[in-house]
Length: 217
Image 1 (cartoon, rainbow, N blue to C red):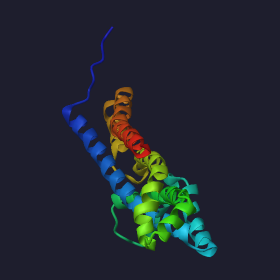
Image 2 (cartoon, rainbow, N blue to C red; image 1 turned 30 degrees about the vertical axis):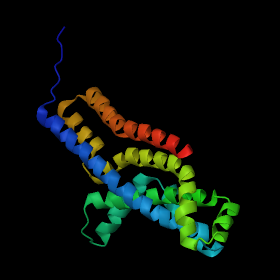
Image 3 (cartoon, rainbow, N blue to C red; image 1 turned 90 degrees about the vertical axis):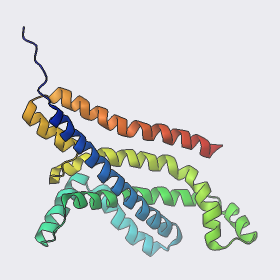
Image 4 (cartoon, helix red, strand yellow; image 1 turned 180 degrees about the horizontal axis):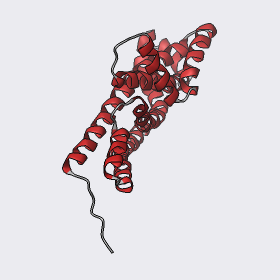
């Protein structure tokens, strides 16, 4: 009985590593931008009237409800129709950022609203200004509510970044698909991809759990 030897080369592993780096890059950019706008939108939702919230909710609900894969394809096609020269990296990053902001918005709004009004009134009665109230009272207390949910969003975005492959971005999954076609080492490569996603996500989970314990002290 012949033993099949893996046909993977050093170049193939390097190609896979490049895909991993691209996955990390688009995830970091998307999470950073999405979190920033999520904080802004969450602040607006917590402090605006019903009309503003209705408009903002409609926009965010579309981002959260339409499957990401459809958003990628439609936005990429729309850029082509408008003849806008934009790389697939930024197409993916823009959609992932918008998608992230939709979920972060609700998390931030819930974090702000979780701070008791009595606590905030007490802070204002002590002479704190509107912004000092947010900086020294609302944000520190709300962070305990926001942080665990935000970490879950981060981990979800890292995994969802694999969908950018549908528009040709050569991230980890796309690199793996090409190597599978070349080497026919499907099982080995898919196990490797799963391991790579694990080594990205698990340290984040461990650090988040450690930081969450500190926040509860």
